[in-house]
Length: 129
Image (cartoon, rainbow, N blue to C red):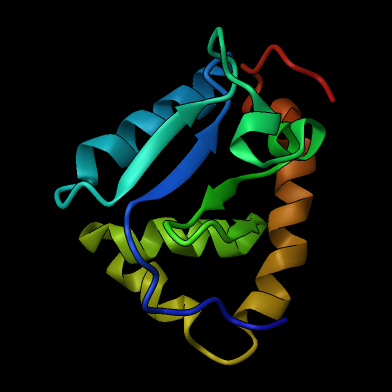
Protein backbone atom coordinates (compact mmCIF):
# COMPACT_ATOMS: atom_id res chain seq x y z
CA UNK A 1 0.00 0.00 0.00
CA UNK A 2 1.54 3.30 -1.02
CA UNK A 3 1.60 6.30 1.24
CA UNK A 4 -0.24 9.42 0.08
CA UNK A 5 1.81 12.47 -0.82
CA UNK A 6 2.73 14.22 2.44
CA UNK A 7 2.63 17.59 0.68
CA UNK A 8 -1.16 17.44 0.39
CA UNK A 9 -2.60 20.72 -0.74
CA UNK A 10 -5.32 22.12 1.42
CA UNK A 11 -8.18 22.35 1.87
CA UNK A 12 -9.23 18.72 1.95
CA UNK A 13 -12.89 17.72 2.09
CA UNK A 14 -13.71 15.20 4.83
CA UNK A 15 -17.01 13.34 4.43
CA UNK A 16 -18.93 12.33 7.56
CA UNK A 17 -22.39 10.97 8.38
CA UNK A 18 -24.31 13.74 10.13
CA UNK A 19 -27.15 11.32 10.92
CA UNK A 20 -24.80 9.42 13.23
CA UNK A 21 -24.22 10.99 16.68
CA UNK A 22 -20.76 9.44 17.02
CA UNK A 23 -19.80 10.71 13.55
CA UNK A 24 -21.15 14.20 14.35
CA UNK A 25 -19.11 14.23 17.57
CA UNK A 26 -15.96 13.26 15.65
CA UNK A 27 -16.64 15.96 13.04
CA UNK A 28 -17.15 18.53 15.79
CA UNK A 29 -13.85 17.54 17.42
CA UNK A 30 -12.06 17.80 14.06
CA UNK A 31 -13.61 21.21 13.38
CA UNK A 32 -12.63 22.58 16.79
CA UNK A 33 -9.00 21.46 16.29
CA UNK A 34 -8.63 22.70 12.71
CA UNK A 35 -6.77 25.91 13.61
CA UNK A 36 -5.46 26.47 10.10
CA UNK A 37 -8.72 25.83 8.22
CA UNK A 38 -7.27 22.93 6.26
CA UNK A 39 -10.34 20.72 6.36
CA UNK A 40 -13.84 21.20 4.96
CA UNK A 41 -16.32 18.90 6.66
CA UNK A 42 -19.08 17.61 4.39
CA UNK A 43 -22.19 16.04 5.93
CA UNK A 44 -23.29 13.19 3.66
CA UNK A 45 -26.68 13.12 5.41
CA UNK A 46 -27.40 16.79 4.67
CA UNK A 47 -30.28 17.67 2.39
CA UNK A 48 -28.86 18.37 -1.03
CA UNK A 49 -25.69 16.30 -0.61
CA UNK A 50 -24.85 14.59 -3.89
CA UNK A 51 -22.22 11.87 -3.84
CA UNK A 52 -22.12 12.01 -7.63
CA UNK A 53 -21.45 15.77 -7.64
CA UNK A 54 -18.68 15.25 -5.08
CA UNK A 55 -17.12 12.47 -7.15
CA UNK A 56 -17.55 9.77 -4.49
CA UNK A 57 -19.53 6.56 -4.52
CA UNK A 58 -22.59 6.81 -2.27
CA UNK A 59 -22.37 3.33 -0.75
CA UNK A 60 -18.62 3.58 -0.13
CA UNK A 61 -18.73 7.05 1.45
CA UNK A 62 -21.37 5.76 3.88
CA UNK A 63 -19.15 2.84 4.87
CA UNK A 64 -15.75 4.41 5.43
CA UNK A 65 -14.03 7.73 5.89
CA UNK A 66 -13.28 9.59 2.65
CA UNK A 67 -11.09 12.62 2.04
CA UNK A 68 -11.01 14.57 -1.21
CA UNK A 69 -7.73 16.42 -1.55
CA UNK A 70 -7.48 19.87 -3.12
CA UNK A 71 -6.08 18.35 -6.31
CA UNK A 72 -9.19 16.12 -6.64
CA UNK A 73 -7.64 12.84 -5.48
CA UNK A 74 -9.83 10.80 -3.15
CA UNK A 75 -8.35 8.69 -0.38
CA UNK A 76 -10.30 6.38 1.91
CA UNK A 77 -10.03 4.46 5.14
CA UNK A 78 -6.79 4.71 7.07
CA UNK A 79 -5.31 7.01 4.43
CA UNK A 80 -8.19 9.47 4.95
CA UNK A 81 -7.61 9.28 8.69
CA UNK A 82 -3.96 10.22 8.13
CA UNK A 83 -5.07 13.21 6.01
CA UNK A 84 -6.98 14.44 9.07
CA UNK A 85 -3.90 13.78 11.22
CA UNK A 86 -1.72 15.74 8.78
CA UNK A 87 -4.07 18.72 9.05
CA UNK A 88 -4.37 18.88 12.82
CA UNK A 89 -1.37 19.78 15.00
CA UNK A 90 -3.03 18.06 17.97
CA UNK A 91 -2.70 14.73 16.14
CA UNK A 92 1.08 14.95 15.68
CA UNK A 93 1.61 11.53 17.27
CA UNK A 94 -0.82 9.89 14.83
CA UNK A 95 0.81 11.76 11.95
CA UNK A 96 4.24 10.46 13.05
CA UNK A 97 2.88 6.93 13.45
CA UNK A 98 1.42 7.02 9.94
CA UNK A 99 4.83 7.62 8.45
CA UNK A 100 6.41 4.54 9.96
CA UNK A 101 6.99 1.66 7.53
CA UNK A 102 4.22 -0.93 7.56
CA UNK A 103 1.75 1.05 9.67
CA UNK A 104 -0.69 1.60 6.81
CA UNK A 105 -0.51 -2.07 5.79
CA UNK A 106 -1.41 -3.10 9.34
CA UNK A 107 -3.74 -0.16 10.00
CA UNK A 108 -6.01 -0.57 6.96
CA UNK A 109 -7.42 -3.98 7.98
CA UNK A 110 -7.85 -2.73 11.55
CA UNK A 111 -9.61 0.38 10.26
CA UNK A 112 -11.86 -1.78 8.04
CA UNK A 113 -12.71 -4.01 11.00
CA UNK A 114 -13.76 -0.99 13.05
CA UNK A 115 -15.58 0.75 10.18
CA UNK A 116 -17.76 -2.28 9.45
CA UNK A 117 -18.67 -2.61 13.16
CA UNK A 118 -18.84 1.03 14.24
CA UNK A 119 -22.63 1.07 14.61
CA UNK A 120 -22.54 -1.95 16.92
CA UNK A 121 -19.45 -0.76 18.82
CA UNK A 122 -20.66 2.80 19.39
CA UNK A 123 -24.29 1.80 19.88
CA UNK A 124 -25.63 5.15 18.79
CA UNK A 125 -25.68 5.33 15.01
CA UNK A 126 -29.07 4.81 13.38
CA UNK A 127 -27.77 3.59 10.01
CA UNK A 128 -27.12 -0.07 9.42
CA UNK A 129 -25.26 -1.01 6.23
